[in-house]
Length: 314
Length: 311
Image 1 (cartoon, chains in turn red, cyan):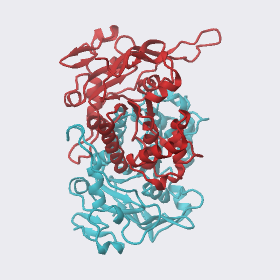
Image 2: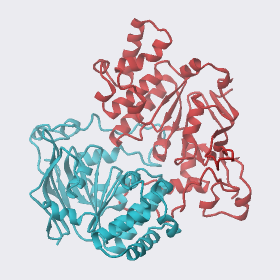
Image 3: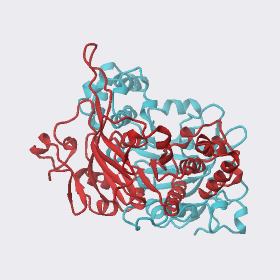
Image 4: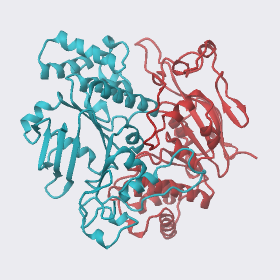
């Protein structure tokens, strides 16, 4: 069976800073050979710190960025062969900050209904669909005439979700959907996402740095570091026993509210490498507590053992 | 005797109180976490202490003393600020001046408050950059803020705060803009420095995971008021106020529930204006007739809570 979304050996580059007047800019590899698939009804999470390429990957999936190499296929059709409009009907985003992704001068009704209008759905039917969708995401008739600034952060995120779902897409790309929300509201939105997934048989690509959120929502997780996937597998299994040293570090840096636990003792040290001067071999070796000579020379491949793939020489 | 003693602190605009009747006290070497969701008034409380409120905001208090000095005296507060009381913020890029080098900024703080020559200030800056874990400190002194990564900028900010050997450090969401692996290192640095220098620390955070690891005592704020103030073990293991209880239940914890299990949430949102009665009443599952009268912060076992039913 073909997966809903299939990413194969994807490479994305950004133009780098020019080295000098006569030197050409060296491109920066934001995504460096990523393969990933999302099945129907599946939730796949991308986890990693800033600069790991997870948002670039999301942009590529939404067709907002042209990959330098590799392919993304939706239901077997390459994204490159689809029109903007077709793509925008089938893969939709929910971004971190709904305040900057919602047009401040429009009402909720017109924001949520815009995709319908672009697809020439008649006004009367449009009104009916928008109303039904608002109910579904936990808003009501009262909110139809409001503008984004008249809504709370949680309500704005509900509007963003309603807009994403209005064309009945199969796949929603949620980029840090609750990072700008308070925990009490975060719980409301996460529950809504889980409920909608069940009711509408949606697939999500969930981008998050919060491991506990990922564990609750995702079936599978891909841990990214410096443009590559370093570990991938069922979310519960990956977090219960992380194999890659980077996943282990993320796991131990996650602070749950526990008054009996001290701060995690040994940190990674250092920071994500400069993309303009990538390290040799395994990109993680300068920060890895177990780095060996081989890691400095040879980039490890992603190898699968018992359903979990890890890119590490250990 | 406590180093900091604040009583009945209010911050208000012309129309609306934003922080109401806050009492805080802090001993030397102690860490107090001010925890709460956005809009709960935790940052305003800190800014009011430092007399750094923006235009249109007024502060008043029945008492505000720092080591015997009256903080309601603006001149006195100004002299303490940056020397004996230092502050670091969430985004160091906005707190550091982009057009001066790190060295210039560190030295300026020292020379302004301590006098002394450039050489002396520079020695201290080098020493502190090294202490906060910045490698090649000579090179860093000559760099501008934008040349440093987020983690290094926050370290430089901490070094700057320590230039005049403060007694109290106020850290407002110091790790919120950082990646998790960097966050743990900055928190550990703060903890080490505190022990080493006997610093009192007020840590403002929305992250209860951070508060639970760092606090000696934790004050939880809601809608401009402290709703619970107790030692760390009480707040995080046996919280007395229904808001603290509900907030802790909302947080997903790794390995604690099967995938797909719904999270407990707090329905509704924090009120933005002042309402009659308990501010949490509309969202509280145990609200009763008594709650239409606003409860005071009452003493409860091992702390205090603003709830008629807490014991």
